Length: 312
Length: 290
Image 1 (cartoon, each protein chain N blue to C red):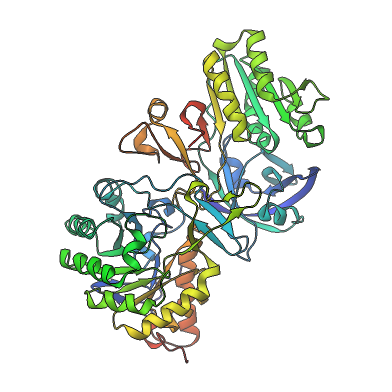
Image 2 (image 1 turned 180 degrees about the horizontal axis):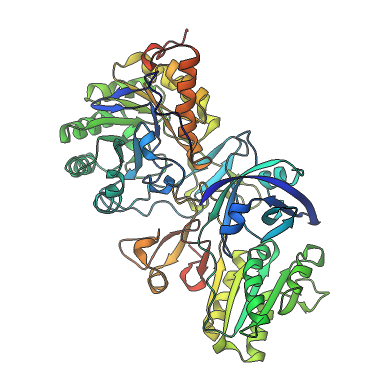
């Protein structure tokens, strides 16, 4: 995939806590594996950062089979954070990523505050990890997961525990399945988060009218993601960007540079591309090129000049 | 795996609901092995959203300097309906070849293909390879085709053109065999006395595979089956297309370090990825009732 990423006439770099990203585009956790799966299609060095699959202290087998259903303009899925566990991540997956110059952010999940802190401590000692994205928003895990993301006190406790366990950049990922997301964003900032990413999937379901069963089998419900959630995500990112001072990372249905720019205009410092990576593994490169072209056409020197300039 | 921009050369209905599409795709045609699949973006409009996986039916030289692949598909949902409306000259974005296909059992003499409905096309490339070897008298090829009704019988002519014995079972009768292909398979293995010297390669609904399990274990016949799952990415990233597998069997057949199988901490099972570890599995690897 050819790219104009080396063009230096516009500055796409942004800071996320202690991490400097060369551009604001990253994969959303769980849609990019451990990076290696995409190596036939893109050069990982061209990305702002790589965010890897949700990682837990122990390996997890995840949800039952029949995990994905397509819905109009999106996806309903329940993976249940299947992952190899933090030790095997460090031993088997991280060495591959260390070959690149791209910052690596590890998405972590846990069933207790202590588990989040423990995973963070282990990752902090590993060479080649730049940041921690705290998954307090997984819609598909019974214990832990979203439980920590729908109670502001629990959110605060987890973020504080992770903050105390590391000097790395800490970025909680919020769930949209709450009444007032700004309360959760504020709790994260008070607990010491360096940045906040949002949103994870909306809880949804789909029923097969012939079998009268869930199309997700025994999983029953799943997370709704993809282009169909973009307007919902955009509005939530806009709300959060207005109430916190830390950088906000926008996630939700991004498939193009125009989508990404909408989030940036709404106040996002950077974006994560999720579901659409599964359709076009090279889409993030197209988005980076498209953002650069937009800035060049409008003769804007950098992203700082347009962030949050949406006129309400 | 790589991306290839292809062009539709032909798209025609074979039987009610079944279509055949020819795509100019020289790169993928040259790289695809029997049982592998490609992932097609059926629209640039983002709905239907995901690419659709199809096992390659045949790699062909279409003449006029065009080489590519043929797909045989059934209209089962929104994606295949969009595909059926495509006309000659339209562009299609492909990723492929993907997955792990069939492995020829060189140690066996009789090779039996068992295909039902839209699973049948997945066996044709292997059939072509086996047919060549059968022509050299290196092995025997037996093709068992299953269809619910005579109207739903597809690809009969293509399979009959191979150097093999073709047997057809129709659930409601009216052809060689009245009933299910699995009953025909059991009878054939039994009457021919070939249990010790045959291998089965199958593609069809999961119910057919389940019916094959007791036959394979009774006669101790190896079978490779091509599994189907809803897929997100097709490249092993999203972990959507998992299939429950038996640990002991998987360890027998695979180098676990280069596979994508993950086992539970305790117990004797785990999940394999249909897109990377499959779509072809050994029948004893798969656990059908989760």
